[in-house]
Every structure is written in structure tokens, then in C-alpha cells.
Length: 75
Image 1 (spheres, rainbow, N blue to C red):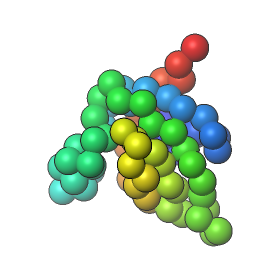
Image 2: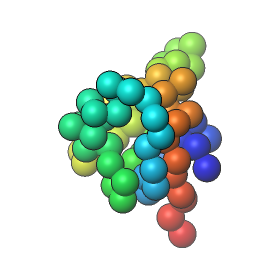
Image 3: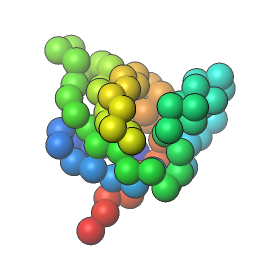
């Protein structure tokens, strides 16, 4: 499942971050790593970017980049 498929308020575990170049390093530095729980907080008014919570930190990720992040829903 891709990160873009999360619905508002849902949480999931990050399984894998695909090849997104320099952004991957920045995301890892912000705590977006395999095994972490990520929650979709809200979408921007036009739907892009999306705001997520990881390790109590709010981060915005463009849908184009979120498409490269694989997740699995807990439960």
C-alpha cells in the first residue's frame, strides 16, 4: 500500500522508502524510516501536499513523493 492511500486520521507502519533522491535523506533525518508509525493529519486545500505526523513531528510530503513510500496498516 502506498502512503497516498491513507485516509485522514489513519495510521500505518512505514515498510519501505523508494528511490526519491535527495529527499529520501531529508525524510530519514526527520524520522521517516522503516518501522516508524506515520499518521495522516490533513490534506492541503487543493490536496497537495499532505501533512503527516511522525514521532510527534508534523511534516508535509508532496503526493508525488508519498507515492514512493510503502506502508502497511496496523491491525
